[in-house]
Amino acid sequence: MLPSQYGVDYEALLSAARAESETNVALILREQLLSKWRDLYVATVAHVTNIVCFQFRTFEYIFDLYSELEATGEVPYNQTVQDRVVAVLGTSARTEEMRDAGRLRGWVGPTEEFVGAERDKGHFMAHCIGGGLDVNVFSQERRLNRGWSPQGKIYRQVETYCYEQPGTFCFSRPVYADSSSVPRWLEFGLLKTDQSLWVEVFNN
Image 1 (cartoon, rainbow, N blue to C red):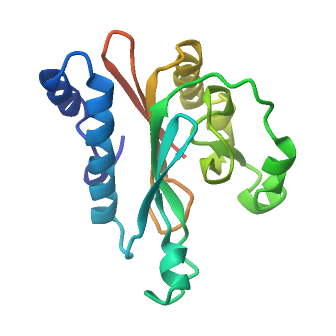
Image 2 (tube, rainbow, N blue to C red):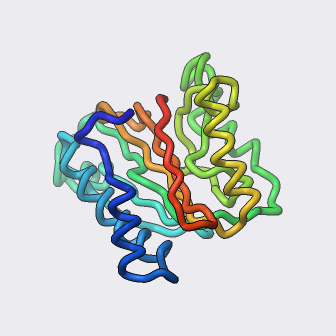
């Protein structure tokens, strides 16, 4: 369960989207969520933000590129504030590409040395549904990522739905308790074929 200051009323957004159009629910949700998440993020962080958006395959990323403000001298350098993903959303698409394991190993170095013995280099959007590397990779609790814990089993179920139903509108929203790039919680959601929303919150 997320603290109230980070919460989003997804059912209300879904109802509004349905009321606007029965045939373009996913498109309307996408527009609403991009705006809602951005505004909520800016309102709940202590530092100045530099929000940028970019597309990778079938997913759009909202990203806080704080280091750009440091590089241009707009803010003083602060090693506690890290660049980080605000949210990812788009449609699942099975990929035939092999995952670049060498490149993943190169992300910040050996996994246990840099993210800890109980953590993995997780993906906001799994490779099997079209997610990439680089900003799509983050420090994820190992049992959650590998489906070992009760929460992890549910996490895998959501991923599996996206994989088995290509073209599913889905999203991942990390929620942070500090200014690092390691989420305290993860919100993972999708729009089912019956036009209902399935949203889960996971501890990370």
